[in-house]
Image (cartoon, rainbow, N blue to C red; front, side):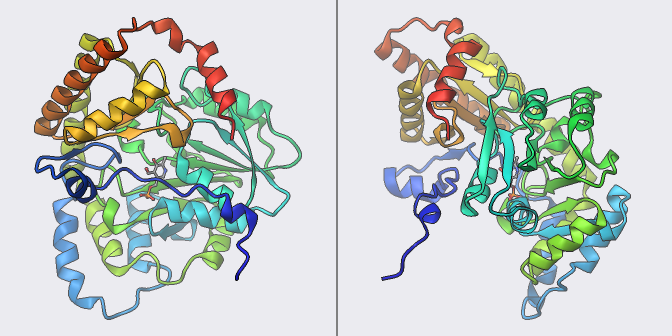
Length: 391
Ligand SMILES: Cc1ncc(COP(=O)(O)O)c(C=O)c1O
């Protein structure tokens, strides 16, 4: 019998949004709408689709390990030298390489409660000690993070906008934070949702910073609609990118992902349409949440975090939505037990989702017959619940 290391035995694996086929199998439903994984409801960029078809006959060949063509396309688009760029099978893969390449057993990793679960999983995989700072009114407490730096801190992970809260920190806040971070601490700025936030003049574009201790991560899983093909990239100083190449699997990302990404990067029209649809869908949701008095956190991304009175209510809400063919994302595994995340959809999907949400919420309100008190969600209660669930 092989002994499995304790930290692997105890590892809670990444829990993704429920797949559509799985729900169809379980419940025998024919109409299912999935708004659980922050995917692009428009599908993939049409230019990417064309490229996938065009290059599918070449998959007998290995890829170029440095993804030469794609790196150059990224270099051109973002005006960054190719030496500062590395690509991977989604930014999640790059997060793993970052933990592998830049942290040792005794190093401490600093991040926020209620941030991207993929980061927690990657840190836990390597048994890294994570120090988590509480969210402040559902915002990453970037000043609080700086205050929690110790001599053991090696990496600070930030997602901006943050998943699953949808909130962002401003350029001013980020600049003040950077002033307090010593240069021997690596800052990971995960900008998975940057395209949805970039029009806000207060949003800090990570690529505008050229620092020896900063790596910016981007994914093509969201606005570019390429989640299933797995493609992401990191931009940072050359000496750090070189180290990442040493630990990266040589033929990742796959050939079709590389070609799809090159084509998608050039598809501005698709990005414009995606952003417009996102705005419309979120606005429809916001109006309905207001009408139903469902508490939500103002978002800078392509999803809303909605909050219920307690974990039990959120769990039941999720189950009832599934029964009606709507897949949303319960957030217990992110540390927000009373939260549900729902991303924007097509107009038709949004109408369906809001009908289900209204029906389920009214049914549960009756069942619980509890008056919804906004005060319940004020900071004190929220912090207490996080402390109870401290990882
Ligand atoms: C903040 C954040 N970072 C990274 C990722 C992972 O993206 P990818 O599909 O590129 O692995 C996600 C996906 O949900 C995310 O929300």
